[in-house]
Structures are given as C-alpha cells and as structure tokens.
Image (cartoon, rainbow, N blue to C red):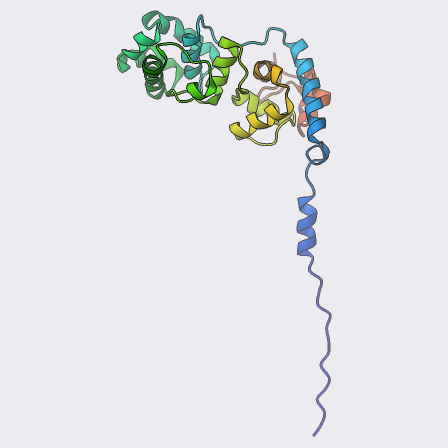
Length: 257
C-alpha cells in the first residue's frame, strides 16, 4: 500500500487579543495611576489653601437665623438654586416660624409657598415630616448629631452635614452637592460621581478641621470659575494643580462676560 503523505504541521497563530486587552487596561491617565494617597492629600491641601485666599467670603449661601430655618432651607435647596430658596423662605418662615408651627401645617398651604423651588409636593412632605420628627423626638430642637438628623424625613447626610457644620460648628462629614461632585472630579481629588464615595474619599485626604469649609470653597469655585458648561480654566487659580483632561482646551476660550 502506498504510504500516506505526512501531515503538514502548521504553526498556530499567536493570540493577539489578550495582549491588546492588557495594553488597553493600562492606558489610564498617569495622574490617577501614579499619584499616591499621600500625594493627593498634599495636593488637596494646596488647592484648598489657594481657594481659601481666592474666595475669602466662601460660606453657606442660604439665608437663615436659627438651626430650624437652616434645616428647612437646606431641604428646599435640593435641585434648586440657593437664590431661589432665599426668595421663598422669608414668607415660609413668617407663616411657620417654629417646628411646632410647621408640624401642624396644611400641605396645600406649604406647597403654595414653596412651589417655585420645584418638587414642591415631595419637599412639603419632607418639611412637615421633619418638623413633626423634631417635635416628637427632640422637643422641637434641631439635634446635634449625624445619626439623629439623618433619621428625620428629607434629611440625608448632605443636609445633616450642612446643618451640623454651619449651625453648630460640628464637622461630622463633608456635604456633597452637584458643584462638589463636578469640581472634585475635575481636580482629580476623587474618581467617582457617587456622593457617598466622594464624601469618603474627600474625608480621607482633607484634614478634619477643614471639612466644613471644604464644601463652601468647592461650591464657590464651581459657581464662579469651574462652571458646568463654560469653565474659566484660563482664569483658574488652581489650574496648575488640576487634573481635568480638558482644562487646556477651555483655557484658550475667552469667557463671555
């Protein structure tokens, strides 16, 4: 019988996909890969020092006269500007000057007063529910602990941090709003848009004694310089310390006045 021809051995082609995937994973911005926690903390301190000098008037923009008014105003500030809230609260507090008065309020009357702030039905439930909680559990007084505040209707960690910090001078957290989310990410101080994670990351790199002021400074910077749509990167006092990958492009744009 004739011999069968020997099978021709062909070399298998090397897999290139795994190498490409590995390379792609390593293409993260150098600032996020190389910066240690200690280096980020040091950069955060420099940023806050500069912002503190740039915005010496940085403070809570809500108008209030006592902790109850600050608590109610902060509840109203959700998805609303502080300016709009300040337009609404004088009439609201004249009609309901204490938690006891708000606890007895008729929802329709409260809704009519706070309608311009948006989401007025949900906010009315929060205001009345919060006031009822203050009366029932705290003798009509605003509590001074995070645990007690977050148990009140409409009061999350952000609201509680604002009240504790500005009404009592107590730093139990860092209030994270839309400005803080945007600015802290652009600066490269955090790498997440989840409020709870942003707060944890900022608390880990910012000294405890600066927690209250950190919120005010980042909010002022977000309003006056690092706006959402047209940031003034060319005028930014912390441009050299920023890690936003679009900062150079916006630095060449002449801002509209």
